Image (cartoon, rainbow, N blue to C red; front, side, top):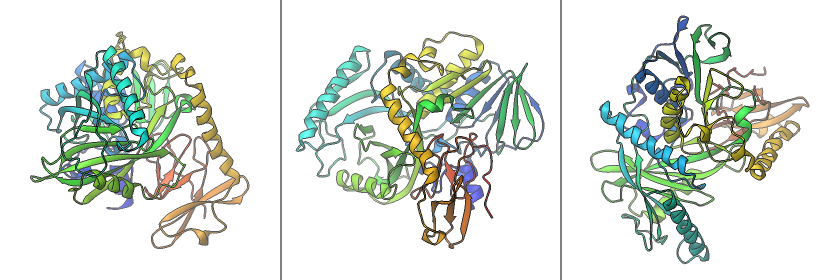
Length: 505
């Protein structure tokens, strides 16, 4: 598949496991916008959030026009491990747990009412220690899990703690028995049989201006006029705003074959610094895929090589009969400082709405956003709205120590404007990239393709003006400050990075 075709289908060099039974050729196909349009609501972004919002609005009688810079489901939705959970590792807020529970039920309702075969099922979720029982840290972490269990019970979460918890199929030498059991969690296939909407793909938004009505202008010169616009692009196009209080993490996933029925159908996660999450999805009549993710790190920091190999080693140590690794991919997770997503009216706006900051709960938040945004547009009071309000201050203010760390991380990437990763272009290996300082005010990045040809571009991202970082695992550039992922050829992968980068001749 060519680079241009791949970039229209997914935001990464490698394909996720979800294409195994749902290849890109089976995705709904839509035309590119070729005329001016008038509508009630314009939804920007055709991932789980955009589709859920469009569905809820259409269900309430609104005319919706959805646009997507790539093809449908080409963004972060397809780069996940696809958990659906009300288990919140960062601590519980009763109303937040209730909203996640509602989202799980809503997915079940929609998949049944529309007869969508998306592998949806309810199952238990297990929270376990990262340490083996012979490690002194095991009991300390288990004590934390017990505390979480008791806290969750106070807000009526169906959870229990089981001493000696054993997961079927976990037959390896790493003994991590004991853990919290969260009932009524869920999972599904994130790209299988999504509802089909009127939509225009390969149609990139370049601006949205509020006048008497909202004017959404696209890169191909056409305008969508609407009463309201919803930016469901994972990282919305705007000035600093909410992304100034978010950090981006890159997460890694593999899909490894296991014999069907040999491993319990459940969700598994641990609270390790090198966080792991595990689930099953269909492979064929005899096998399933064990989807295992983790080894997250801040974008633009740490050596990214070896992540997939570490995940494979982790699996084989615990599930000794695992077969071949057929898929590996990575994605980005965007976490607010208070660990609660931003869903609602955009800061300083009247008819512009955002969905962002999912913090690893993107599929659950995406469905939840459908109800929250539709209610807010219609002027309906939703008891969860204030929790996810994009203008909230109290919970963000309580996270100031974390904010200071985040600001230091951001500052480090501006300091890189006067630093260089290499002495000369000859230092860049084929199939990789580096930052080079030639002119004091204009650092460049150099990418060498597999044939050894060097391509030079400006190293500054077009919006935040921070310096890019090469990610050798995904074979592309990370934009650490405003989080928009980019490929090796520096073509923007989401609505936020709206301009093509200038190549230096």
